[in-house]
Length: 160
Image 1 (cartoon, rainbow, N blue to C red):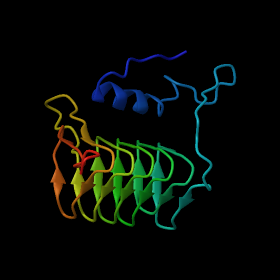
Image 2 (cartoon, rainbow, N blue to C red):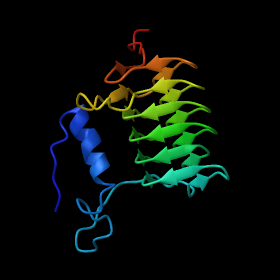
Image 3 (cartoon, rainbow, N blue to C red):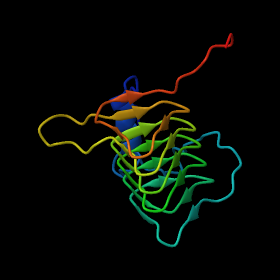
Image 4 (spheres, rainbow, N blue to C red):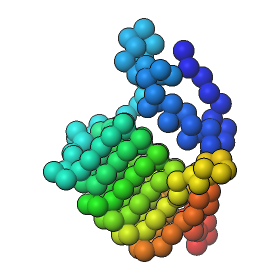
């Protein structure tokens, strides 16, 4: 079996990356099935110019860019020329054309606009700094969210 405390951003990211390692978690072990509640979605679509390496892609995803070493939940859209590396994308995320997502966790229904950059690879001198975008966050086109930063959507309470 496998167990990990996921009480921090870093440990949540590490647990998802562990799913990509067949020596840590065997996703195909019939004696230890993994169960989840997945919405009914169409199969994922992989575009003609898309590239996917060492990643988990679930139902309803539309992939037209490059994805490597990442876990994509259902209904994620990756635009042409977008790059996703070592990241976790929650359901309904949209990564527009030319955007780059690295070492990040992107929340449900977040939108990363064209040519934005979220997260950075480690510099080799310090520990990995995971960047997070909260649910419903919109990162503006051509903007940058640095390593280890957290951004959240502005929400109004029920009183307006």
